[in-house]
Amino acid sequence: MNRIFESVPVDEQGLDAALAALRLSRRYSAERAEAACRLAQTGRVRSPRYAHLAPILATGQDKTASLRPPRSEPAEAGGYVRGAGYYAGDTK
Image 1 (spheres, one colour):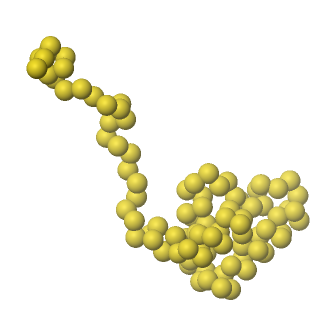
Image 2 (image 1 turned 180 degrees about the vertical axis):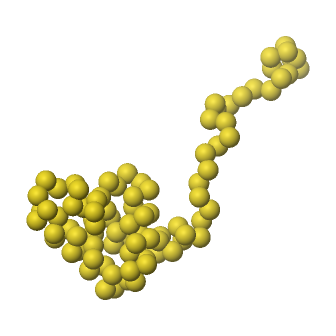
Image 3 (image 1 turned 135 degrees about the vertical axis):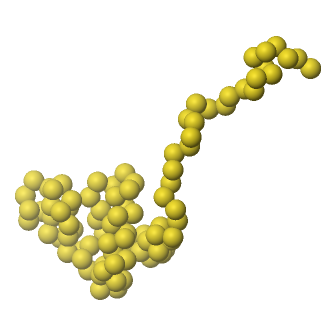
């Protein structure tokens, strides 16, 4: 909710968006709504709204996100690396 109110210049402009997000806790549990907000914020969404949260909850992505291990970056982000034989001039 704080993110919604931070994204608008006047607090009253964020009331409808905040109430719509809160209404999702009527159909889904508050824990699932919180999990959907966290999942939406891991992406490119700065302030999650109903349009972002409803599909996450409807498809159950909030449940599977807690079961998945956190994504780790690859050990080496350098791309394709040729073996030692290529640099030593080993031709076949």
